[in-house]
Amino acid sequence: RQNHRAARPPRAPPVLPPAAVPLHRHPARPALAAPPHPPELLPPPPPPPDPPARRARLPPRALPRHAPPAPVHPRLRRGALPPRRRAPGPPAARPLRPPRAARLPAFSDRAFLPLLRALPPLPSLRLFLSLPSFNSHPSVRSFNALLHSLVAARRLRLAAALFRAAPTKLYITPDLVSCNILLKGLVGVRDLDAALKVLDEMPGWGIVPDVVTYTTVLSAYCAKEDLKGAQKLFDDIIAGGRVPDVTMYTVLIDGYCRTGKIQDAARIMDEMEVAGVQPNEVTYSVVIEACCKEGKSAEACNLMGEMLGAGYTPDTPLAAKVVDVLCQDGKADEAHRMWKWMVKKNVPPDNTITNTLIYWLCKSGMVQEARKLFDELEKGYKPSLLTYNSLISGLCENGELQEAGQVWDDMVERGYEPNATTYEAFIKGFCKIGKPNEGATVFTEMVTKGCTPSKVLYQVLVDSLSEPIHDDIVDKIVETAALSGGDFLDGDSWEIFIRRVLDTKSDTWNKHLNSVLDT
Image (cartoon, rainbow, N blue to C red; front, top):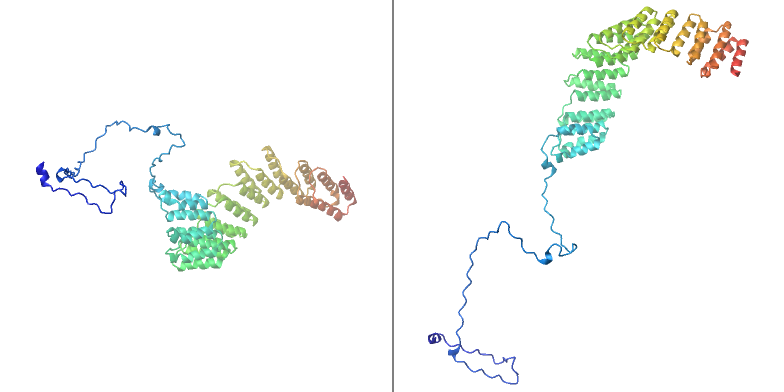
């Protein structure tokens, strides 16, 4: 211990500044000096502490698999706080769903084509614009389907706007089908100027018009009856090295036939055959119908024979027109032969054509042929009331009243009731052969059965009963018609009888007429 003290020098007492005065002493009283301590009695200063040793990192202690729950403060236990003061927990994390296009498999827009065509215009447009959300990319096929929907609904302005904006806005280049669809819509509303503008711009778009394109524009010219423009376009097509097909020829021929220019239509048919293009069924039908309309029975018959020889079968309305124009021209026999040829060429039998032939054969004096045709029809089909009336009218027109009476009896046996046409045929037949009394008797039965006579029938009766000896018969006719309770006498019919009074100046018949009017 002494060695330790001797090794360290003694600590000098702290020297205070002279102005420092202890606060615990009274300022008036001087502080007493502390007695000095001998240096050897002072304790040695403590040694400096060692720096703290760094604790080695230990591996984390493995928790038991079923660790007991951590203690919970009593105030945080369930039910300790009222529900209003309980803080809501964070929402549960929801997994992020990918967009619909990423969830769907990629497929072609071909599946949407029927729907795009069938939907109305605006829903079809919405579906087309939303194709990317279905993981399907729009193409020119779906664009054409959209154009088809717009054109079918007559939304031509919207269709034209989409057509113009397709390359820049939709990044779709229209093709030939797109142009044909738009042209068809423009021609449908007879906007020929817009159609010609599209046709002129097609080469600039790198699109070559085809037969469908030119046929559509030709039909627009013909619809406006601008045959000069149609002929010029047709000549330009041929001059450009293109060969028109049968459809283009038929459209131009139809344009000439509609305006009554059958000679020009025949000229186009000749050019057509020279070019090696054979007419089809539609071509023949167009020209034959035009000939029938103009009353050219010989030309219609020749073309019908050419059509049948080429292996084409005309439809029933066209065959009826040919038969009718031949009969109107007094060629009932030729019409009959033509009809037989048509039936052999698989034209279905038709009652209207048969009725027309029966009537005109009887009227032309070919009663046996008419009766034979009626019997042939009766074998395969049950004759109608119109067929019976046609045969009866033809027989009565030819003066065959006895034969007509047999047909009448056959008709009644089959359950048909005679109508006004049947009665009028017999009345006119009796009046024609000079038997107005029998005609007046049939007229009385006709009015009794409730059939209304026509003005023509009254005129026929009055003309056949023009002699004064028939005043009683005319009086009976007027009395029967006026007192039957129906509208059998109108103003025109009364005028016929009044003129009879003025022409004959018969006082007896005048009195009878006045008595009927008074009644």
